[in-house]
Image 1: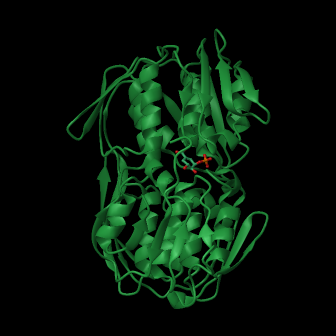
Image 2: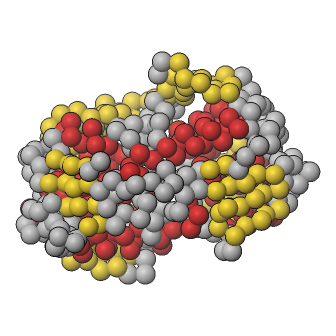
Image 3: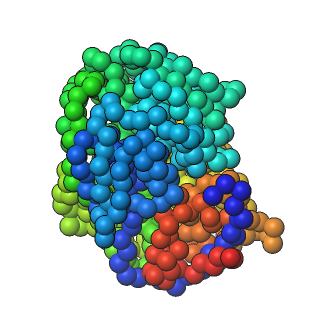
Length: 451
Ligand code: S3P
């Protein structure tokens, strides 16, 4: 999707949203399914995989290193190479827009005695990779990178990597995962120390594939994750649950469009991912968690959501890791709440697919919402009912900066604003939620895309 032609889109005040919606598979678990399945010996079968651009790029990277991947009916069938047996790819990897694909794969292959090159689109090549390259350098990996450790990056692994103990300096599941994956191809025990818990899909899934992984937790909650290198990984069956980050869009839309009443089916309820639901419930959102069940070792549930009178709150900063991708849509919910919502601890938002803190603040202002952007905080003053909200002028178009979540969040805003909300480009939505337009329109949303 490099140098694509932008597809502007608009969302208009919509009738009550009604019906059931099933969001696509979780992006984090889908990336890891291709990676771990592609690495394990024997067969892995995956259902519910997110077929978004980001995940497909990870699948192609694994194929380029020797994994066999095919689809039969609804099932993806992966025959992996075996741990330690990835092949040197012939071409550079192009991860498009995907930070998770690029960073986790750097960890996965960095310790191999081979050369790999990583690149991506105009968003990915601006994002900091030093957070992954620093621990890899300690493990013996040679790095050639553009200034500031940005892509394109070439890695050359050592003959034998060095196991390390690494304290992750920021709350990042990607950094944690990259080091653990590098540890898979390293003799001895590699340890990751995680002071603030982030999504734990890598740990859970690797142990499901048979990796030897031990986790200890200190009294203050710091986690010490030890992975034993060079063990065998065996293929398995994976049922990917619905992505709670994607669920956030119909969820907030139903809360703010008056008269709405919907059910979102099959959302992952892993506690490292449910911060948005907790926060919206504290704001007065009527969200009932129903049919809680186990799906392949993860809790999933359906969410019954009804339009609600929201009130502004202070969002605890320590909740940020469990809802890090949900702040754009939370800020939209806050724009319809009574009073002010204060969100803090948002420094990581500056290094996502775009500087999300700046992009959200600018988008809100372009649509008549009073807000204040701090260094790592955002304050939003809500307008219950959305009276007067929407494009402040004909030129007021939200700039999405190649960021799928900025695009979706502002389309949700338009569904409940008095005037339409316009975005400059809806193309990137395909990276994480290709069904977004159809799913939202199926619930009753009034969205138009110019082709
Ligand atoms: C992800 C981790 C998070 C998140 C991203 C997916 C993952 O990134 O924002 O969308 O799958 O590990 P960070 O590790 O940068 O917080």
